[in-house]
Amino acid sequence: MNEGIHNKHKKKISLVEFFIPLFCLINQYKIAGINLGLLCVITVVSIYFIRYREFYLYKPLFVFFIFMIIHDFFRMFITGFNSGLWIERTSYLLILSCIYKNNNEENLFRVWKLIGIIVMAGIFYQSFQVYILGQSVSTINIFPFLQSNSENYLLSYDRPHSFFLEPAVYSTWILPFLCMCMKRKKHIWMIFISISILLSTSSTGILMTGVIWIFYVFINFRNEKKYFNTLMIVGGLIIGIVAFLNLNIFSIALNKLINISVTNTSNSVRLVLGFQLFWATPIIYKFLGIPYMNVENYMRSGEVTLSKYKLSINLPYLGFVNAIGNCMLVYGIFGLFLYLKLFLNIWKESDLYSKCYVLTCIISIFGQSVFWNSLFVTQFAVMLCSVERTSFVRVMFGKGATCNLYE
Image (tube, rainbow, N blue to C red; front, side):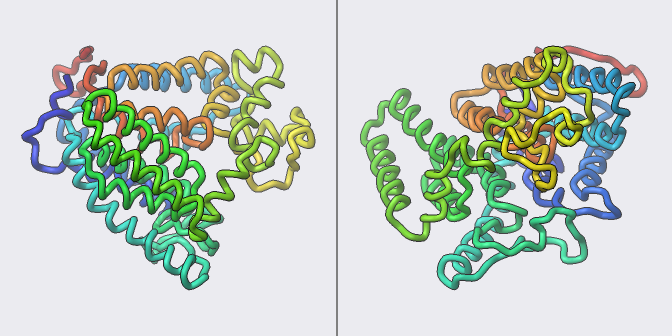
């Protein structure tokens, strides 16, 4: 068992525990053209390395990483090699390798709760501006002296999103906290978090929230046999659904859910475009991946008939596909197998309540771009810090360096 993760007596909050909830927030900003989050990752990893001289690599994640870098090494003779991308991915792997022995679930919950209060306050404040005052809102800037290269950074629109660039990112970020509250049966917190997600109008967040509540009802009914409590939760869920369907304040969110359809271009891009592109690729691409640096380059190469997918070369989101589509297109079916196996391993090694969050992460790869980016790091940091029976490779540096397997 992971002693560092499950040590109930650990009180002091580590740098890694504090960093995990902050990463997505700070990674939106840049210093001298470099993401602030990446600079902080390198700093945290360096401090960890100097102090411990060891890393604990999660074996399924490490195998997937090695496959990807070998794949890109051989592909570079056709496309070149993106060294900046691999510095970033290596840094992400190393920060995730600091999870073992440096994450206590209770400490992580305390940190997320503190930061979550501030972020949710931003959502409720912006909701007042949008739904009561009729004002458009932009991202609440944490660092006024820094900038972001995102188009959404200065954009004002009628959807609350607090300190994040868009509502979907907020919802993805707050879901781990919702699952932690579920695990601790913090019903009031669960309600406030769920309301904040509804107010954000993120269709992905709303669907995930529904999954979490249904999961919670199911395990309460199956395991605890507290039928009265379960009925109370179900009753509250029904009241929430009725309010969602009838209150004008949630009409935007409701319309977004009703209009989810593969015939809608933006939804089609998000949900099925990756699968459509993969199905249409030559057989060699299906096994080895596309011979391009990324999906956008592939779509701009002339090999793809964009009009077939109701797309044009001038679209700003051209090349956007969900995480599973990105993986299968760039790394082929072998990469896809290792990617899905990674989730399967974590699912098997997680306790019952933690499985709920793993489930939301699995669902997210079908609707979001969460492939080796800041959301990927946040999701896997949370999943890895809650596994009970897992496999790590211990890599030590310096005098007497060794490599040990922990299972």
